Length: 199
Image 1 (cartoon, rainbow, N blue to C red):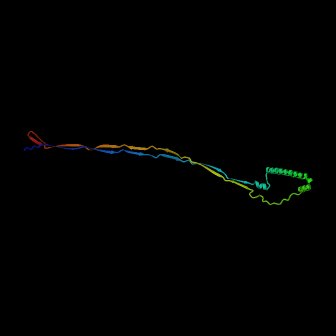
Image 2 (cartoon, rainbow, N blue to C red):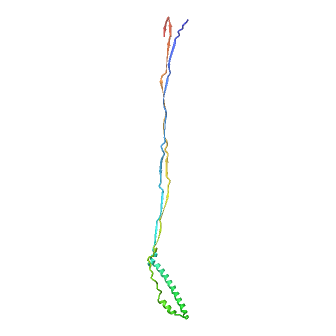
C-alpha cells in the first residue's frame, strides 16, 4: 500500500463589509390661515315723524259771547240789515194791502198804529254761555315711520402662501470591515542536495 502525503494549502479569507448610514429627507408644509378682515357697516336708519296735532275751535264761544272780529261783524251786520229791509218791505206791503181794503170796513188804521206802537211780548229765556260743546276739539295722532336698510358686510380675504421646508436626505457609505485573505501551506517538503525541509 502506497501512502502519498500531499501538501495542504489552507486559505482563510474575510469578506469586506460596507456600512451605510442614511438620514431620510424631511418635508414640512405649513399653511398659514388666510387673513380675514370683516367690516359690518351699520344699517341705514331713516326716521320720519309727523307730530300730533290738537286743534281747539272756540269760534262758537266767541259768537255766543258776541265777541267777533271785524270781518265777521261786518258780515253779520250786512245780513241783519238785509233781513230788516226785507221785513220792512213786507210790512209796508202788508199795511198797504190792508189800507186798500179799508172800504170793506174795519178799523185798519188804529190796528196798524197799535201794532207799530206795542211790540209782541217776548218771554225771558235763560241760556248758558258758552253752551255745551261750544268748544270743539280735534286731535290728530302723530306718526313715526322707520325705514331700515341693511348693509352687506365688507369681507376682505388675503390668502397666505404655504411655508415649505425641505431637508434633503443624507447617505454615508463607509467600510465597516476590511477584507483580507490568508494562505497557509501545510506538509510542504522541500528537498535539495540530499536534505529535506518541512515548510
